[in-house]
Image 1 (cartoon, helix red, strand yellow):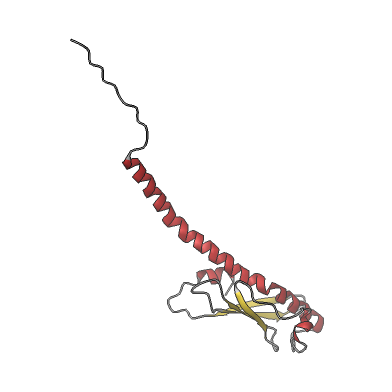
Image 2 (tube, rainbow, N blue to C red; image 1 turned 60 degrees about the vertical axis):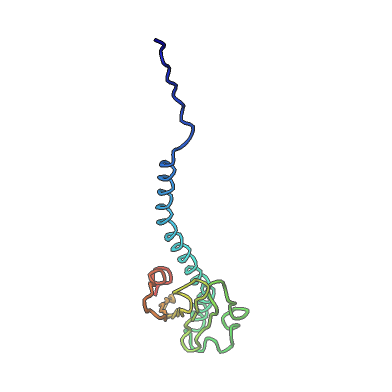
Length: 156
């Protein structure tokens, strides 16, 4: 009898099942990663709100120290704060205003996305003997909205 030789063919690639498992794993990772990434992008945009008002906060703090308070802070316009003019709109803030009587800074959020657009953030100074501290309040419609990031990043 002749011996039969059985030749095995070496595997040349991946099977369909192996490829399907890899695709499923990538899908699961993407389902977790994409929402986290969007959350980080939102937080970064909200952090830009604080950056946008920082120069005005510094100017008001200097004004308060030099003038023993913030009464009539905008009597001479933005020049009294040492600023060349009203801060321009940015990617995330449509406008920044200062309340004359209190020195409060009011910024309206735009460009961050829902549910944050249209939120008004008010930074209110408290003038102490050696420093100016800032309180932060936000006015927004809370109906069914998750504003956790706003509270974490902006502080209201």
